[in-house]
Structure formats: structure tokens, C-alpha cells
Length: 308
Image (tube, rainbow, N blue to C red; front, side):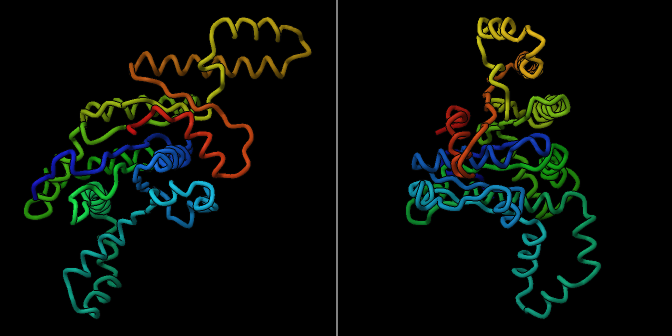
């Protein structure tokens, strides 16, 4: 299968990083902003949609953001279901399909076959990016946002495509080679590592970026610093004023907040010096009316983080 030209597919934007740093919220926030600007955006979530709806509600989207509602799509790709589709297409007789899918050996193979589920996930992701309208030949989506799983699973998923090309032969190897070419082309993918400024999250982010660059020649376009203190981007003169203001013993709470903010500022500076890419600070949102309001506020902070 020949790959389409870069202009004939969606741009893939990957939100990656440690579990629990807010990738889902951040990806939905930027998707909402871009969709409200008239771009067709599909978010591939690492969470089943029912689980996602509990975590982040889009209730009221049609009323408050009608333009975004027409342009924003959220999907969850379950690898087991994708493999089941292959079985259904291969065997037209329903009783044969049911026998295979219910077979314990088949179910065990799906779970233990190295990289099989990841391979089919990436294949569907590629199909979404390359899907085009028959009449015009233009991509169905302008942007594909991948809310990637935690670092280890994310890197393992990318490695799966390369392993299928390297270790197998036949149709799967050819498809693996196609995937490997697709995901190794940095022009197709924008990586947005997302992290809080906690020590473990920062360490994992740096290690993940090193692996992406070494194994896939994929450097981050920017690093998203989620739930950061306002001091991360504060001017030095502002910090000096705050330090003078919290000198009194009665202001221990303020001093704690200042020390915490300065620690986050130091960690942000360390990331910037080591990765040499743009930092996009997303300050903690302290009050919001509902989830749509929260996403809208975060989206404003993310305006320059990805292509329009």
C-alpha cells in the first residue's frame, strides 16, 4: 500500500507523558479550541468513552460551542475489537466467527502475542489520519489528537510497528513496514510531552523524550507544563517583591507557596535547558463553573501549542 502525500492526511498531535499528569484534559481542551475555530478534530482517547464521560463531561457542548460541536469527534479504539473486526471480515459465516472469538486459545493468543494489540491500534490510527472524503479527496479530519497512554505503554505501542516489520514475514510484515514508515516520519507527527512539575513526572518526561529522539527521531515540538505555579513564568522583580513580602513569621503559608512555586520554576528551567524546546505553561485553574468552562480556560493557555 502506498502512502498518500502529507497534504492528504490529518496532522497527528500526540499528548504523551506519565499517567495522571492531565493529558486527557489538555488534549480535549486544545481540541475544543481548534474545533471552535472551524478545524475538524478527532481525539483518540486512551479511555473508554463511558469512563471518559465521568472524568470530563462535554454536556452542553451543542449549546455553548455549536461550531465546536460540529467539528469535534472523540473516539476510543479498543484493540480487541479491532482484531475481532479482522476475524469477522475474514470469515463470512457468523457461526464460524462466534466460534473463533469465544475460543479460549484465540483469547489467550490475543493477550500474549507480543505487540499484536498495539499493532492493530496503530493501524487504525493510521487509517483515521489517512481517511479522505471520496468526493473531494480531502482528509476527513484536519487534526488527529492522540491522548496517549502512560509512557511505558506509549513507547511500547510505537515499538510494535517496528517489530512487526523486523521479525515477521508476509502481509503483517508488509503492513508493519508501512506503519513504521508512517510513524517514523517526523513531518507527520507533533509530539507534545505533557507533565506536571513533580519530580517523578519531570524525570519520566526527560527519559521519554530521549527515547523518542533516539529510537524514532521524533523531537518534541513543545513541552506542556500542566497545573503549574504562576511563578514559573513570573519576572524576577515580581519574585523579589514576593520574597520580601513573606518574610514575616506569620506568613508561613505564603512562604510555603512561594518555595513550592520556586521549585517548580527551577524544574521548568531544567527541562528547557535539557530539551531546548519551547515550554508552554498551563497555570492551575483555581475556579471554574463546569468542565466545559475548565476546558475553555485551558485551551486559551494552549493557543500556540499546536498547528491551527
